[in-house]
Length: 60
Image (tube, rainbow, N blue to C red; front, side, top):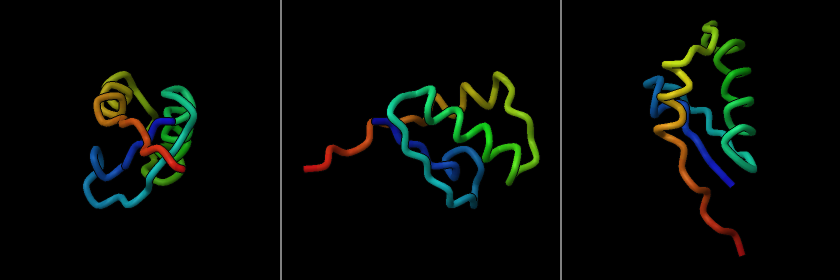
């Protein structure tokens, strides 16, 4: 599982994303970028998101 916090790239944004893998998180972030930030994801945004992707903590 991977996790991403939008605020790591867009200061002040509180949205967090959790997905099975990189692609799942990127799909969610792309939709969020369009709907909430009114931007179309570009290669620079994808790189910024990828740089801030983390492994989600294991749950028991």
